[in-house]
Image (cartoon, rainbow, N blue to C red; front, side, top):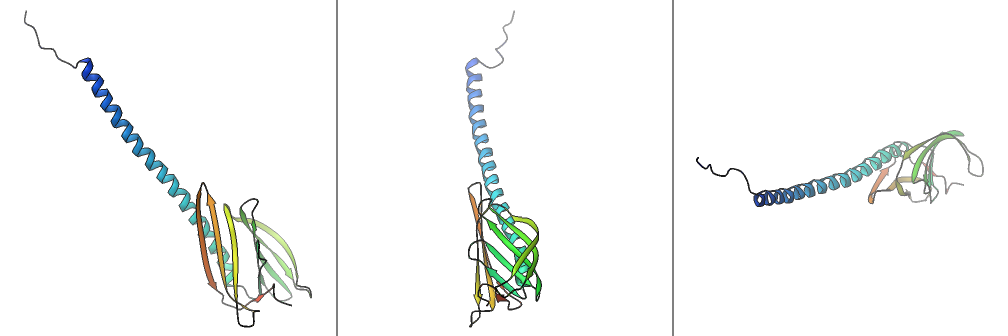
Length: 180
């Protein structure tokens, strides 16, 4: 009887091949995990940028068209008033406890001691807010507002985004905090 050659792999060859395949698999898994982490990180950063741009855009619409009065209380509330006597008011209120800015709408009644707000609706404008500040630039006598600079800091999952926008106003509203 003729002896046929051994066909197949030896146990040592199978172990070496399995070890090499394992190393290649670990390298591929490492690249995939790094890609997933990068995607997640960029996704949070882009989400923060999008939220900030959307919020700034909505605030811009109200601020630019402000006719009668605008006020930043120095800590957490931007108030915009339109209309003589009994006007419409909009407030952007930063709540550090919930890390949100809410948009409140309602009425404003002028009085000798400044005025009264009666807000009738409220909606969350943006979440993940770390800080919100407003700077008003005045004319030479310090009563009329020429421009408003909005700064919005958002933070989420260890990522932060700061958006700053300076708006030149169409009208020259009164700074309600300096008005008599």
